[in-house]
Length: 109
Length: 113
Image (cartoon, rainbow over all chains, first blue to last red; front, top):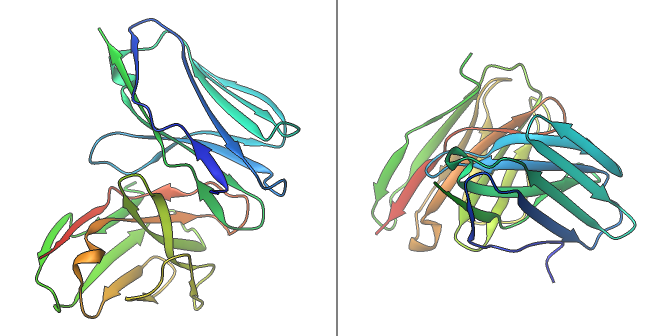
């Protein structure tokens, strides 16, 4: 069983919809949680960085961490075609960053 | 401010050939990393350097060597390339190891025939 599980998608939504992404994990030592966005033929780009449980909002993006359920989420409001990318969750607890496999998101005009 | 720069962007090798992938960062970060990304496998850590002068194995180190040349530069060497090493290779850096977000380059696409 992988330490970090992420549905690979693809997840297709119409422009303006809310995109909901999530990851589950098994190791309770994880304390730092991140979301990366990766466009085709580009490197992952840090979107959100949170520590421990709770919510964090940055513009159209909201990250949620529920440590009791070992579950993290990313919401993208008012989605745009430019949001079409692969989204990777990542988490760290002891100096080793563990990545999910990524969810491909397609926002159609 | 370029961030993390990787060269080359693309390379085709024949089995048994050797090559070095170069990585440089201009963010004054202490820690640097090499990953490979394969379809369905996500990002897997090959080697990392927690600070200048140190290197350690990651999840998939076999067939690779690394050199932390100075604080800015971290290279990855394939001594005898194999088709199983066909992948996209990413270099990343972070301020320190442990809980810090990593910043990635745009990758080197390597095909081994």
